[in-house]
Length: 122
Image (cartoon, rainbow, N blue to C red; front, side):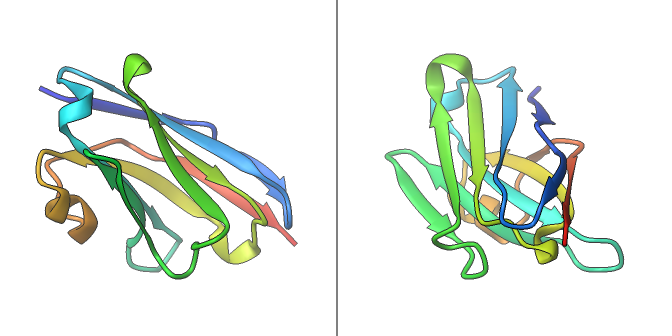
């Protein structure tokens, strides 16, 4: 059993920064690929970023250069540092985990958090 709990969402002005966290339990954290997806109202869920061992990282083009994914294995936590935020970034952000990195990137990972809402005002 794996549990993922996101936190750090909130309201931020365009151009600002925000850091999301996803705390994991019930598994060996370092052995899993981790990622972030987001979903805006009325839109499909889309890939944001992913990281897996040994330190492989992949970003969606829409966030490349603005968002950074990182992880602290000692704390069983993965982060998404978001900078230069735009209103288009407004969405519920979900973390995802799986032993298979390809499943994480594809959005078919076995484990998902319940999401945290990020609202970027113009």
